Amino acid sequence: MSENLPGGALTPSDGLTLSRMGYGAMQLAGPGVFGPPRDHEQALAVLREAVELGVRHIDTSDFYGPVVVNELIREALHPYPQGLHLVTKVGARRGADGSWLPALEPDSLKAQVRDNLDHLGLDVLDVVNLRVGVAEGTTGEPLSAQFAALAELRQEGLIRHLGLSNVTLDQLTEAQAIAPVVTVQNLYNVANRQDDALVGRCAAENIAFAAFFPLGGFTPLQSDTLDRVAARLGASPQQVALAWLLQRSPTTVLIPGTSSVAHLRENMAAADLKLPADAIEELNALAS
Image 1 (cartoon, rainbow, N blue to C red):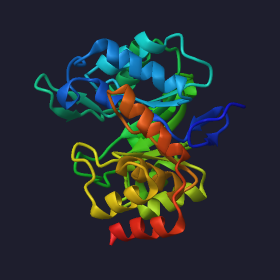
Image 2: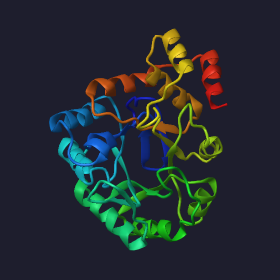
Image 3: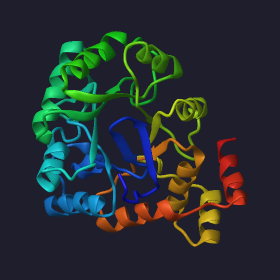
Image 4: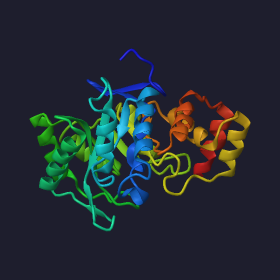
């Protein structure tokens, strides 16, 4: 693609070029990522503005809502612009009370892929991430049977590329013995650095490392250091946290979420913020 993408472009595999600054659609659902959005038209406007700003990487899943977010994406953007890549996840379902329920049986995973296809209005999914682990982090459980089920659908032509979410180094190795892995999506931000080794490995192997909760997630990052660096640079703390991630590794991609057009624009502006060496040194110290 010849156009300039926010944060630059990353091509982890033939036929897959991601804008390093992407958009995470999870927050478009209602409170607790459950039910319809508070403002339906605003949700559509955010999706359209993201694409207008150059985003070519939207993260989603049928368990956001559930189904709600994928249907919003379809309503806002279908037929999809050329070069826009929708990255979805399977491995969970939602209870009637909004609870998050593991759904990792191979047949269930295949059904979830077909549900995502239906709700997004697609014949083939660009990237499907296998979500394992739990809300509190990774578990290290074997994933060969689950990943093999998705690899079968890739062979059938329903999926172009495969990825992983919430995994360990060993689980990445296990999956790679079955099929190529183009993305890894784990919790990582300037204050949560437990996956430094995984970030480094992804860079060495040209795997997109999608840092989810780049701004802290449901509990936003709070740091005097972050505030101080932001004030010195004339930026917001959120912009500094995003810029740090972009400079952390050449294969880091970001999927910050928001249901506000104004907040979306603020996040996208972080792609143009270059942190000086002294600022990076201060922020790196947060991990210790």
